[in-house]
Image 1 (cartoon, rainbow over the protein chains, first blue to last red):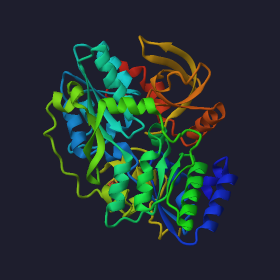
Image 2: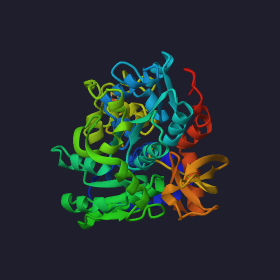
Image 3: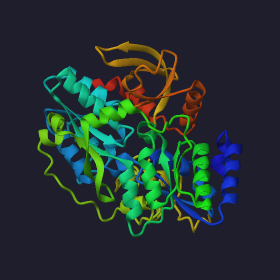
Image 4: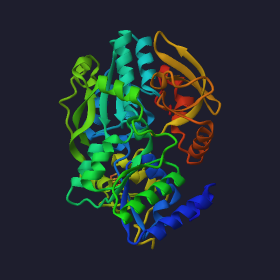
Length: 369
Length: 98
Ligand code: SF4
């Protein structure tokens, strides 16, 4: 495999790949739910290497990608206001809204800034008391403790010109939605290592039992992913369906308790709209009533903004594994990273961008993989 | 964007009851909140840091390996943000920036 051989643990990786092929008596369908893992799999050609033994479906593991259009439009409306300094992680700037993106708001004079940490946004609010500083709080469970702490600190420090536009999502409900959809093909999951670093894996145990799917907590390096796949395939072959932890170097069963505590003090579980997947019950986090003063949606009255997703973008089917990114008619033609039609083409962790950046222009059958 | 970056804790302090510190990421130093590892880490320890928060303690060997792999994967976006964006973010960013 051309990419894998470049990787310095190439020998171990090839050994693991051989074991997977030996153990598999049929082709199994697995899903990774972490954009970092998607990136590694496509870049290193792990899916092509395992063709015949394992099919990898790239799940909704990119928080930028699953942020719904209407939430992007709400962000754009807030960012366009003259009194606002709008802050976000860098990935969000090029996500297309219905009419424009954050870059365009900036070129029209909006004060849009990329921050590294939500605490930077809070500091910005402290230094600019005459401005309203808004932070676009997206992410999975990994990022929620950081964003929760920024709100907690804002209250502690009495900073009132700070608010957050929350679009937090959580992984297990999305897995349930995928498993319950009538066209589900997923037989086992690689759970995201850094999500579980925060959350642990106890919440995956009832899922593995109920839906009879193996779930393996996995890191994002090539060797991690191959080992995670091997563990899942062994379970499937032996008829087991348990939660196992491949990523022992970082993940403990109970996760990071202090982080979970702050998240549950600041956020409540809410229903959330996912780009491409629709509304999923109890799949997100929203600010608790007592933190309503920090809710940008209410502060700027943008909660009424709604939006219809483009019919040309097949993100939903891509995220459910019904289409590979390069089977979308717009892929690589109307939709490219410089001019994305949908969110999975925007972030480097999105499946469409990963396929584009690593030259996957043909469908698997055409490439003979 | 869920990937954390490992670094070495070089300073720990108490910001009015709020545990903060400085972490060295292969030469790039940055303020990090240590509230989620309070009492668990000392100066010299390694931790995985995600968007300015230390979320888990790792050993030196793991930290080194992960850092190298992230570099090979060109997945050090967070580090790029840190380097290029962190200082700039407190000042207005012109349209052509980033
Ligand atoms: S290639 Fe573009 S249009 Fe097609 S599903 Fe991906 S993001 Fe949407």
